Image 1 (cartoon, rainbow, N blue to C red):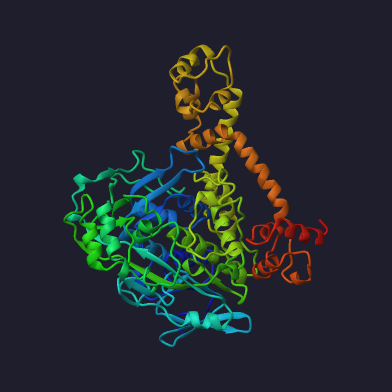
Image 2 (image 1 turned 90 degrees about the horizontal axis):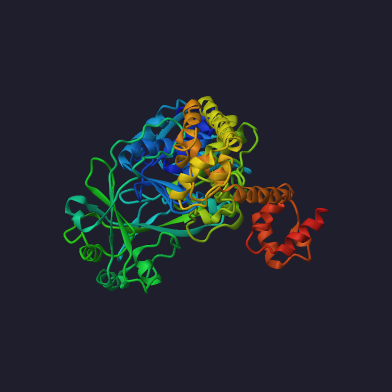
Length: 623
């Protein structure tokens, strides 16, 4: 016995998925045991010390709106903030933060330890205990049997992890840490399909040996933003990142080491990430390019260690260093440690339900890289959903599932369990068909009430969001009914090179023009008085502006959501015998039997299931 006779939830792994899973289940009232090989590495940023980015920033905002902690911890450890894609439409705007990796780990540890429902145990889980179709606990490397009503596996890259560096390879979950063995073999025996994937990391550099004068400085935004919708303090001092580039000479040196590269001599069997390729992959795939951009990123406030983003590699150490010293600004650079690649086991996510519970064993949940995803944010949101649903399941409560029109989290999970993945899955805005509705600025509008009803988001969060929505409605109403003096406003329109007015118009009509903004109207109308009197903040103004300027597009997307919902509302039973449908293609039958879709909508998104196959199912259901 560790502490409890029986836990409600055992979380295996203390990475980004494990932290959110443990926090969510415990916050909802479950007694949780978090088991990690090393409790000193909880929430470790194994790769880039940054959070957010394209679509990933939206995911963090969604986690925060639901009551998760990743956004809060990011704000507490942030050393730089940037809003990406501001030159594009609001559907593409994505917050990104450079973090202090040590503060990030420390704040996560503090937050988890503050939750009295979480116990901790340092050990390696080697087996899962089962009885019939149910999970009953785990058995550790130390031979300890721990009973539990549910188990969440968040093993990251540790399942039979194999690290590659040039001709050398050795077992490891990440640099300096052992791999986890045993679970893969047992899961295969239980009937799970599995595969191998790979990821990589760049060398870490000594910042004292970099000549920053030869690089391009990349400062944070003047107005430092935040990820959390709560009242986290904004940082006063931001740290810069820097940009440099590879050259033809660098590529030539790297190519000279390809014969010793584990990727090119066949020693790596796993598939690598398409959208975060190694420097070797970039040189091979984009051979016409003479240069690739690299980002010099600080690892924290009080360290000289530097992360070289864009230079992920598993080439021999001497090749890495020779190539680095031919890069502008890195002529005298020293390495803290070389980059390396890591292969690990994953389990195709088509074996999961939308709750992230496995189809083969009840109360067993998978989340993070075990499902074939890559990225801290993708792992964290899966952990959140698995933690919520583990609690809901053992307490016989309704499952918590987000649809594709409600959240990027919904898109990610639906993609995984419906389409599967043969390479590390990464979220992009292009994966979401309703991305204008799923913006980073309105995640609280979409999800805070859901988080509050669950018991994750606080009453204060719920009330603040309610007030925000009321102020948005109030401001839109004011803009609709308030007219402007056309003679006064023409002065502004002339400056903006916009067509002049001949009579009074409502303010909302002016704001529909692409180059006219609320801040422009303040000096020419009584709008400033209204904003101050009603204590309208920047978040409200930004959302109002988007709603007005993109009104037509938003209406079209909402209409599409309604049409899609009709298909999502048509339920398919799990026990349907697809073999009896002679008009469904052979590939369609195979995919339908594998995925076992729960709705017609999900069936229509399965790769290999044609529109005519879907029509056959609709006829069968009398539709």
